[in-house]
Length: 428
Image (cartoon, rainbow, N blue to C red; front, side, top):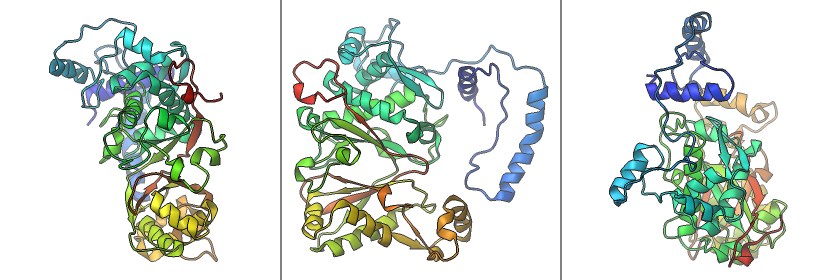
């Protein structure tokens, strides 16, 4: 069913693309997982409506309700916000400017303090699916809403620049029926200066920097980009990490090069990497004391955590310090770990349904050619497996699948003016 609000949002998107009052034809969803015969029937059923919409009279331009929150908080206007906390929350919820949790009102003073030297009118990019224009000021307003400290803002800015790189495919992330969400990985001296957790409970609660940086990204994608659940965010189930997902790498207990160095950035610089991923799958091995044994467990866990489509462009392994020490003592560098997992983490064709095999043969044809073993690896190349060391004591690591056509992006953290946080400054 097409609601008035959905029509309003579609109209806004059409206008941003210069298409005026574009007629709308509803096509039943989803279409990505049905058979070709069913897809042909859906297309043919919509044909009459498309012809009528194209050749018929123009739709009226008025009478459509405004879509709350799509453009982001309007920091240029003064809003009368109730002072009582519960009423304030209701105010922001009604305007569509919250993720359901309490927010901090983005007053002019708070937004100005958050920007701290950045040009408020600078356009960072255009955020799909509604092509909202992300200025520094609007990004800062959402960072205030999320509860960020001004010291965190350069991290938020770097993350947004990474997300808006075409290789990240934010439109796909925002509109998929999957549970994809950006994972923010922070490297460099600012991890300690800003107290971004990289150790015990690194994927959990308890750290303001982790919680609010990740939450700011989600509010930006919703309030500026229009990724509103149930409208343009079509996630069937979603996942808790869509509220916030931000960690730092435990470089102090990492026996190898940290992620940002692998990505071409100097070790002493601050950097943010963004990975479009689905849910976290535990890798628990408290028994193996050899690298070979541990890698067998990791590969097995990766196979169990793979989706029926196994269509990730990339995958991420978060290795806890205890597991990293075992692998390093066994003589393994990251390249050897990737190669071993690439060879071992494969699912035989007979484990898939015939329908999924038909789909996979089109999406990943190289694994269905003559002479190929009848099995499917997690990703297409060993170098598509990224490795991050994080976490505290205990033999618990994690596998995080990525998404098709979404590539990790890394950016330097640029600090314009950050009094009292000299250690956070990075080369630009």
